[in-house]
Length: 148
Image 1 (cartoon, rainbow, N blue to C red):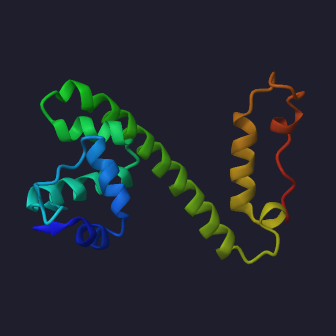
Image 2: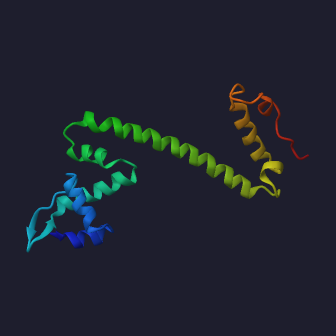
Image 3: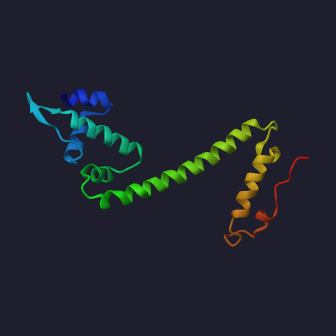
């Protein structure tokens, strides 16, 4: 059995956060001992799952749906949306990682003006621009000058 203070310390949260989770129906104290809330192993597991859900970017309402578990039609759509968002973030982060790694490997001083990899990436961005979005389209038609 865990006291509210002990559980809060172990998870690095405030006791008021645990009480808030209880009010929201996310966490259930087992009983009161000497006027203090106590939690059993099942409650500790719920709190660990709550933390994982937050780390995955789920809202408390979405986590609550998952903890209820009975209605998978309720929690699966938000979970699928978050998963799609995470996949898009991973793609964007991989691209950012590649750009920075290449810029750091480039022997030239200025990655925009002198690094062929950076210039190709900039040219790709410019080619994807919508010419009717306010510009005259000339930026996408003009590749960056390359150092020879």
